[in-house]
Every structure is written in C-alpha cells, then in structure tokens.
Length: 219
Image 1 (cartoon, helix red, strand yellow):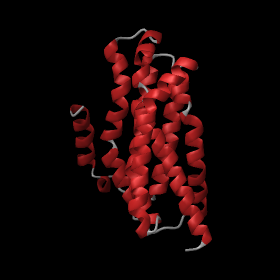
Image 2 (spheres, one colour):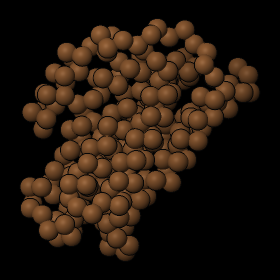
Image 3 (cartoon, one colour):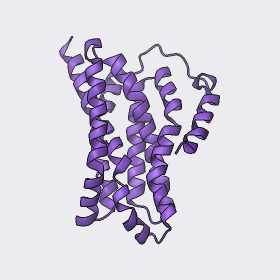
Image 4 (cartoon, one colour):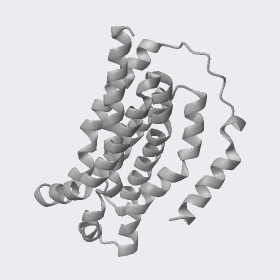
C-alpha cells in the first residue's frame, strides 16, 4: 500500500467518523430542549414533538434511495452530499424564526442523515483494505452510538448555558471538518471511473416510494 493511499484511507475514516457522530448526535439532542422550543415558538406539544420524529422519519424513508444511488455512483460523492445537506439543515435550524422553519431544517438534516447512513458502508467496502472493513464498520457503528448517547446531555448543557441555537450550531464546524477531506479526495480522483449511467428506473422508484410511505407508518 502506498503512502498516498494510506493517507487517503485515514482521511476518509476521520471524515466518516465526524459526520456519523453528528448524525447520531442529532437523533436525541433535540429531545431535552423540546419544552424550551415549545415556549419560544408558542406551539403545541404535538407540534414540538414532531421536531424529534421528523428527523428519524425522513432519514429512514430515504435510506433505500440513497443506498441504491451510492451503489450506482461514487459513494464518496453521496457521502459528501450528505454532509452538505446536514450542514444546510443545521444552518436552517439555527436561523429559524418559526416552528415550521425548524421542522423544515430538521427534515433537511434527516435527508443528509439518510445519505450518510446509506453510503458509508459502500465507502468502507470499496476503498478500505478487506482485512480492515469489519473493524472500520464496527468503529463507525460505535461512533454513531456514542453520538446518540452524548446528544441529550450535550443539548441540555448548551441550551442552559448558551441558547437553543447552539444545539444546532455545534454541527456546523464538525460538518466543515468532515467535508474538507472528502473534497480533496474527490478532486484527486477526478472524473475517472467506470460507473454505469444512472437512470430513474435503476433507482427502483416503486421500492423507494413504498419505503417513504411505510416509514412514517412504522413510527
């Protein structure tokens, strides 16, 4: 293995760990600040509760679609798209002026989370040494679990000592750090590759629609 390849693999691992940590973090970080958000935006309990569920519902609904897309094109590009989507969703939450805006931001975060969760496995299988794939996938799973554990106490701390905006703002620098190695890797790869052209039919639209419809029903 060349030094350049090893560096690229280490950068990819670090980038995936950062992004997946944030994905796990936001699964529970909002739960502890729901009463404050309900008060700030003068909304109902059920509407505030949607902030916790819309993220997971959207993420589950689009896993199938982005998983197939990662198989058809470069999974690193899909993962980078997920990081960018998560960044934009988090930024939207930070600047939200109504509960509707906040729900839209959470939905965009969920879309980014779907791209991250659906593509990291393909990255590991295609771009990491075969003997290390099991360990790396285990590490990424542990990182996501760590994020979900850290989320609630971190959210409470930020809301108490700063403001609820920081619960979402903390994602921004982490997403930027995760994106930089991915951009560098895609630039060095250039336009090379023998991936087949992506068609609407190859994305299994019927299965994708069924997944989107059934996921909310299972919540």
